[in-house]
Image (cartoon, rainbow, N blue to C red; front, side, top):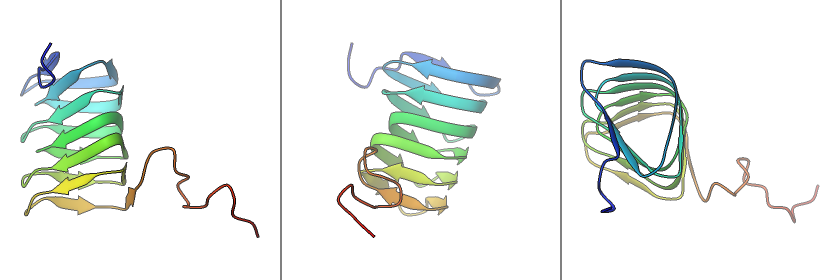
Length: 122
């Protein structure tokens, strides 16, 4: 299977609720509310709206996400992207025109959120 091959497609004009777990790559062009968990790639199309927690290997966003995003390798925000929530990822790519309303934490997902290392002492 090619690396950029889409394994599943949630089409435009559809609404989904619940938990989405997958391997490989999934593209959402409709509305999704709930939890997404995968080591793979989530592609959110320009007309898509995703609400909830997203924990993936890589996120490619052209539509809208409302919620927390943890991406193990990379987040790409295309010019039509609108993300309302916090991002945690080691690599962020942002095209001019993309909107991010929230906090950004860069570093591996193994890094503590508060930035403290195990050797810090009070």
